[in-house]
Image (cartoon, rainbow, N blue to C red):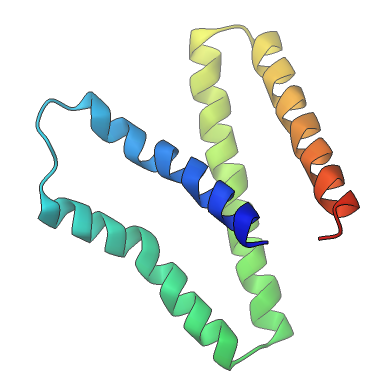
Length: 113
């Protein structure tokens, strides 16, 4: 499980920090600290609160919020992808991505997690 989380977080880091490589001026340490707090602070607070109190309603509420955020970002990516290529190419990419996710879930399930 630790290796899985490490691999997941390592690949996320590239996606988060990647855009910083395209700017000419290096970000300051203060900017990186604030960005780290904005990105990681809510996770820390949520972990602490979630370990202290559990409620089915709040569990469903926050999963619903996360699902809505995923749909919102997916639609933004879909619309920006259509600007660069055809709709069919974007749909094939979405299909391949979903299949890859299901295959990875199958591997994790068979691995006993």
